[in-house]
Length: 176
Image: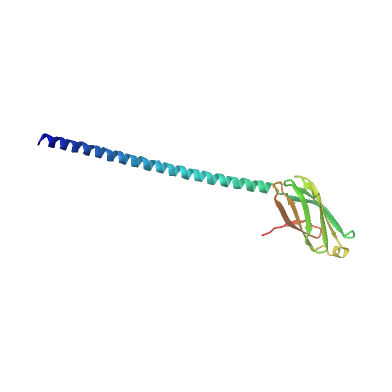
């Protein structure tokens, strides 16, 4: 072998070694890039789950706040005076403060009023009064259906239907 061929073979050998080292380095870089991509994906998955949990927690908190903003009427005592054409019931609000109270009788020939109307505090007391004609008073077994509505402390409209049969306490009519 001539000195030129030796130098050419040596350069080729060095180039081969450099190529092998470059390939090895490239594989290590690719492996590191894959590990980094996997770690980024796990991080994104974790962040997505945390966001999901935070949104669910917020939803539950809002549901709780909403349910705690409703009134709860505990009917206490009442009386009916058919000769006077009137029945009244006292109640206590065991729920949250409400405002703008209204009552509407759905039973023909029976009027209804509620007090207070502006605001009813938590544990506050109130009264509903039904007025009717004497001819209806003879048949007080008929159900008196009425609706109470108000604004909750969250500013939402709350409306529930009740019924009263005879001189029994009013009962909530569950909507399906």
